[in-house]
Length: 505
Image 1: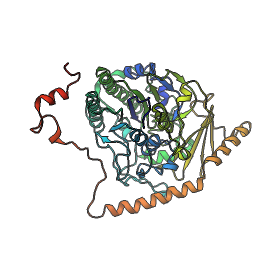
Image 2: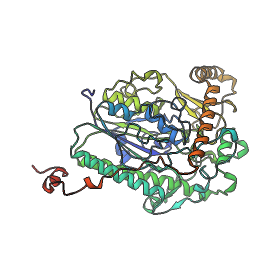
Image 3: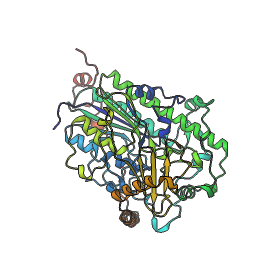
Image 4: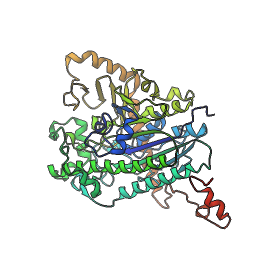
């Protein structure tokens, strides 16, 4: 049951937002006034990392506090088990009402995962169709893999598939905030609002595009590296993105980055409308802002995500609330820490699942404490041929894959990760420490076996279910028209008074 700490909670998630642009709130040159105002009153985590640099695995981990190797959500078509508790389950079990507006990329028949109500459908499919296949290493699955057409086609549009979606996400979320203000349900609430921008394609409305006409950040800090000089995994990403089929020039790069920045401003405006609604209805809430993973946006010649480089793996994280001190926190943390943090804020015990939860509450760090445990990341989806893992601890990041040379970067001296120290004799003690941590946290051969088994099973099931009558798992929002607005089983006078905020005295 709930204790004395029962704040409302608003979680705002965006998609593919590069965390290096949020070293202390939004970069000064970004047109993001609402996020900048939020940052001033938030605990801001300078070095927050995704659990996995891909949508579905990153989101399942964020919701559960567990890495993909524990959740089984390895890629964008892996089923999220219904039996896996999420922060929505923990909060709802303790007396909260829980809602989701927008994307969460749940795969499988369960499209709620603890949410009492979903206000929109998802933007991506809920079935197994996007399953990679380690049996066919290097084979592109052309109908759903990323390709460089997003870069080549960057520019201005007034409506797109993605804009239509986020317009609806914002509208439904704002309507829910209004509805919550009416106080029909006395329970505290948790509303998760999850946008798909600034995820590619890199296309923006002109009003936001024009904000960046004179932007001095349209060229990457690290120019494109020749394919032959890329590390093996980066080469695999290049191949997965079908890079040889597109002639990408400097103007394409600038237009893509301009549209990406413009879409940050688009989302900022939506967030501003949401926060304004919260304020005008006199509702207080703990507010948490984050992204599922980042976007390389042309750095090193790489785009999108699927990499452990900072642009892809590092994400913004800000938390504000009445009892949350504002300030900048440098200690590396993870999105898997969100679930335990929310439970800690509310006073909910996670002891029952603690042995299987890798995330840790961030409240001790927010209140001035320290943490020694490393940040762990995993990747086992398209563009990989075997599971990859990463450890961030202190100033160093260590990347390992059984089929690739190790990588070690000193992020203080080398923030652009240009110098691999893995073979530097002077770093042998550091390497030894990381390899010990690696062995204590992962059995990579078993991890690989589990991923392959999951892929094969899903390929069989997907092909079977697509043969003959198809029953989709995609979420269909329920709108009971007979219970909306005014109907003849209602008293008009009572309806008008009940639905008004503030009410007449």
